[in-house]
Image (cartoon, helix red, strand yellow):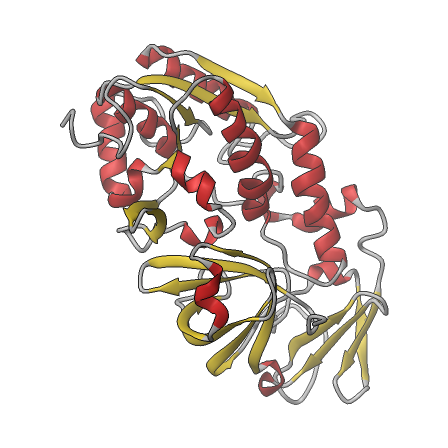
Length: 372
């Protein structure tokens, strides 16, 4: 058992840093590293003001979770540090979240958090502490191949988090390790019980950490007063069908809860943030044959994409993945052409490129065609 979780490329007994959210995954990760003989430092980021925002169980980085992470560190006998990143988190993640909704998009703050905070500032802190690797409890696999570090899906498809890590750079992958990528979640909890961790039966976080009970509209309104200003619900043909109480309450592809009556099923097909209009139409109006993707992070040499690549793409975290052709337009932009029309594509979500289990890159779905 002690040799099962040895880290590729990291010497026995080396100092490693473990990102600890207070949940069962990161706690087991830390315990496995101690068991494998590494010197462990636990690091937890405090990301928001618990008094002004929220303090709820089941969300990472809340007060109880910091306490839980410290309790695990004390039990296992390694130092634990809590770093205050509230201002960075608000600027890089929460403000971006609010602005994205106001622009008629559907954001993914967990990706921005990984990109702007966890795999940037936390990684830098780990290096400054002398750690030879930053270890996290993400369910993904890092596989050395052809002189590079590749990012692959987790063995357990129900837990795979590769979609949320597409912004990870090659340099970051070289330093990161993901011991849980080869485990099913049931085995992780078995390890937690084996180690006697109090968090062994702690529920997984379901919501965005700074959004209480999934009520993101109230958080956006708090960050951007006026976000719930009303406007019109109009049909694609121009007919006024009703009024809404804030465009942030609607997402592309939404059918239920529109508050209008019509002879045919109608879906949200567009959101116009300038006119504050929610535009609805029949399902066929949702069909997309291609999308533009911005801020692309390439995890394979870019010259591979000098020619169009036939890959599998995911356009939301719960998406099964579909065949598509990825065409690189510039250093950071791409055109993705679907093999079959896709429905419910929402700007602000990520489009991630896969070759079998490997992540080749990804970017953010744009609302409009990109300027060449």
